[in-house]
Image (tube, rainbow, N blue to C red):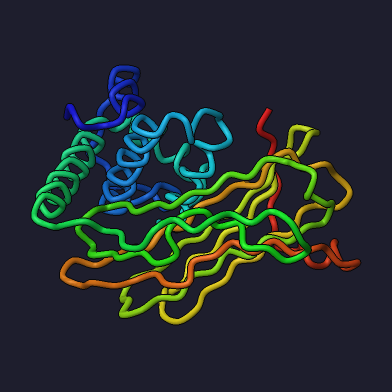
Amino acid sequence: MRHLPVFITLTLLLFSATSCRKTPSHVIPEDKMAALMADVNIGNAIVESERGRYATDSAKMVLMQSIYARHGVTAEQVDTSMVWYGHNIETYVKVCEKAEEILTARIEKAEQAGGKSIGTPSPTSLDGDSVNLWAGTQIRRVTGAEASDFQTFSLFTDKNWDRGDRYTLSAKGINTRGSVTMFIAADYNDGTTEYTSLVHPAEDMQRLTFVVDSSKVATRVYGSLFYSGTPGNVAYLDSISLVRTRGRNDNASARRGQLTTRYR
């Protein structure tokens, strides 16, 4: 299990109790847990290969939250499930083996496939009341050959920021069969993080809007875009953008549904 994340190996060493019981209702089932672990492993690899973009804990958190959102689970569910699996090692080892099988199959498919992206990065515009801040490629080719195709962004405060700003992440699916996961978060100077996410079939234009709390001072806005490709299908995410607009007076109602956590 040399490909598995470090925390998985540590868990195996920390817990020695074994059991053959099936997973209870509050625990993520074996197959779903294996698929989640495979994506978490790839997420960890992304963090290691792009340390500059994931230098802070909050940047790593948004990537993990995106993975969790794709699988329809929360960090709390993952933590609870890891504790149960840690006390049921025989079942956990089987899950680890399934995760490694998933990774091996994805690596083989990736080696058989070509490049995944087309287009060139677009310039970032920062001035004005309505600007497109997306600095990456505006069209993305997805073949389903790789497990993860996370595109991330991170914006720090500058002279153009204003309290209550709105950020809308958009992407148009073409020939898509899977789902798109969008995630936007903001860190505030009081030590809290507010975030929102969307998981939806990727056909047509999909949008996720995040509204910065006008009663706080945001230090950073960041997020990710992920398309869950399917093997044998060539799909595109087109017209990718991250548009910032000036806030309105309905800040409280506009932020309804956004969640808050503490990062320090």
